[in-house]
Length: 130
Image (cartoon, rainbow, N blue to C red):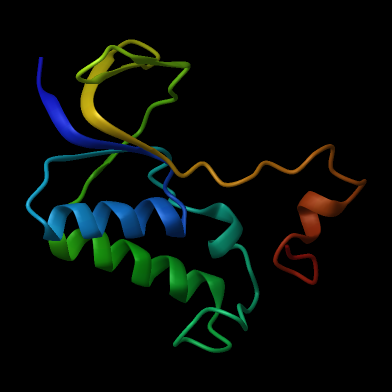
């Protein structure tokens, strides 16, 4: 079984940034999350507070995220980690059907909103944002 230098759980801006930085530093990277990257970003009508990219449509920012990870050779492993174990020298990560190993673990899972209000999901990116 391959042991990665760094496993990153989460494909939002923080997880992607960590993966790019690790890859640039010649680390083997396991990035686990959704291949859709961050639906909160891509559904946003306009993002007005992202450093260096004022008033960018979420779909454009999502495409830029994808281009950035592609440019350094980071791929997303689509899986859901149900448990992480500190095994001394490394971490064991329990996926749906696979166990992964990594020397370092970064949790970049963001936040999950509580119970949505009626109509909130349909309006996400169309006036509703976080």
